[in-house]
Image (cartoon, rainbow, N blue to C red; front, side, top):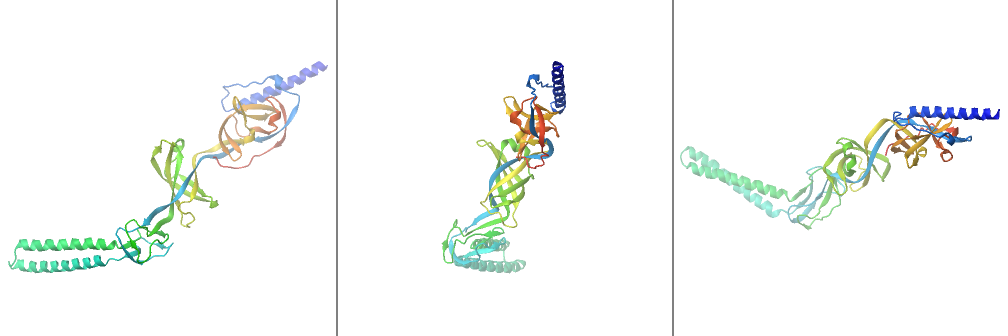
Length: 368
């Protein structure tokens, strides 16, 4: 009678294992072309308590995180194109100025005098020309003389325009709208071309140049959204877009430079700030996720244990991105499979298991 009971128990266990493995073949995403076997000698009378978490289906994204330095959309050191003595400083440090605003004036006495001299010569040449036109109607002057006087008028007009351009160089103007920096000059100072008067930055928009690995190039395009963060504002995300992709890949670093534009109307971002950017390079709406602790690494690759009909079934899986304590499964199981996350150290393939705790695994995260 004892012998008959033992034979019955073995038969029941063997049937359970066979049923579990048949079910596992349906869960495996490889299509059933590869079979997995377990030796009956592995099965133990001991029932091991385990914790399980169902594999879940969620949308995940793969991102690239890179670093860059903030730069003003337009930036220049204001200087002069002529040498001269400063006669007026017409700005305040940190002031916002519009394009064309006069920032400083240099002494231009001799240039002013030259302009007035040329203007007088122009007036005289115009008067002589007008008089000659009246005389030529009466035949009192040759046509060639009239042409000569007309040329003199044009020459003097050109000389006056050139002197006006030269005179304008003594008035230093803002080349674009923006915020001024520190004042570097004083009234009475002699300055020459290249000397710094102040700085001017248009920070209503911020340019950030990032280097992205070559492998991600195919996933990046102009207009793509970029999320930028600064250590100065850890809770604030600045949203921008890819403005330009460089035409060349750096052969040394194997990376390509991209330029991002950020709106900065509130002025939080300053040129020179260290920024990090996150670009989404791929996304999947129905990704399968399991806790990282469920993954088993061995010489044959990555596996998970699934609790199927009270039996621990070892299933090979392919991994994707890590998502805040979880990992994406790109092949091997489908959503809903109860993977073992607690008690893994005590089980082997074919072990009898008893589920003592199950988690819904509702944690969320982004791909990285």
